[in-house]
Amino acid sequence: MRISIGAAAAAAALILLSSPTPTGATSSSRVIASVDARNLALHSYTFHMNVAMAMKHFPWLHFHLEGEGTYRRGDRYIVHFTSMPGFASKIHDIDLSMIDPAMWPGHYRYSEAGRQDDDTIFALEPIDDVNLKTASVALNEASGVRWVDATYADGTHIHMIVNSGEFGGFLLPASMSAAVDYPHMPIAAHADFGDYSFSN
Image (cartoon, rainbow, N blue to C red; front, side):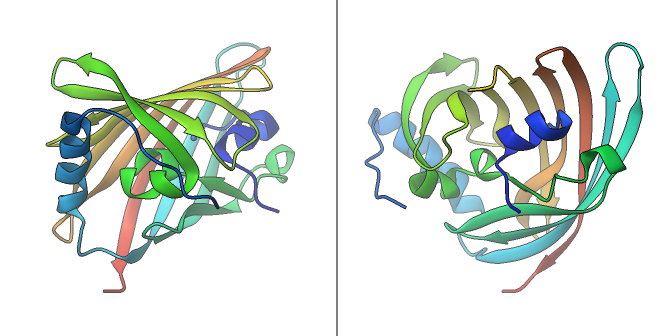
């Protein structure tokens, strides 16, 4: 069973084809191209993800998930969970395509929505995720995606902060923290990325 990051949040309060035409100013294209250039030679890789989650009210549960990630440029950016608590057993996969601009053309129509300090803010309109209502992404030329703010049809709101680092000479996520405001069940989550293995 595959579910989007929005459906995953609904299932366990977890932390995120047509040919769209991106819109926006030339400056936004430059920002995306600059970020993309860092990983232009990277076509596929695998990685491991550890996720720690904590309920922000009674019964104050803390729990842990582990997953194996697969990335194929322009096609797939998925984490498949292999270890999770029993109540989260319906979570199988989450889609991380929002945090990589190279994945956007296959999943979103996007446009520049403004600037915030050194970041360019993009508005994403989903193509293939009926659960996602709106999303904003802050993109930085030097450090890639900085944060994602997404609202889903079931009322879930997720704000993710992405911290990237250099792995094998590429700019990739090192960790991600998230505030998951799932109706009646707010959650704090932290994910660590590691064990990157490159196939090219």
